[in-house]
Image (cartoon, rainbow, N blue to C red):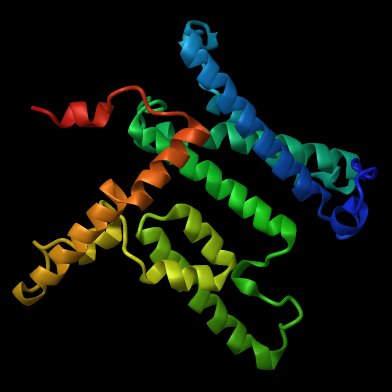
Length: 266
């Protein structure tokens, strides 16, 4: 297709290596994310209503799931042999994924938490998607695998490398750092550094290793100190403030009370 052949370096860096479908997927993903968040923020400010079908509120995850499903299924058909059709399917798949992940928090909590603090989960999901597609686009291979190193002698080392890299990525995810965890799948140094840093409060890692009510009495003081440091860093500390402000800048500042907190009150 070579749609952006007029851009210097596009043909050499994108089209010739066969990355154009991934590039179009990335463009569809990023553009839809920006336009969707722009629209929802304007709609919130001006009090616009949302689309509905037969009186039922139509969340944009619905067309997102439909687009993603149709484009994904068709990409396994004979259309994948047609360069133009495959590129269009890649673009539509990116649009569908973006519309779906923009309301990921609503899917995860099974509640309308779009403009609550829990809605920041959708921003995390979107950033993970951008990181994943972006790293694939620039040529990073998962687990830093060298595709040519598949011989018998390198098979054991390759398997060890995958396990080593994946272990650090899993730890980062367990510490409630989804964006860094996604990057860690591709860049092992990010996984190593992020895995030795403090976990976020409320993460599975903090529950297992920072909860002073768990474990032996000898380790309770250590656990309590880690929990205090974690709460300070990601709560009132500069890192936590920066993360919340960045999320608010990208996705919009939460303006509604958490329905989950309301349900917890007696």
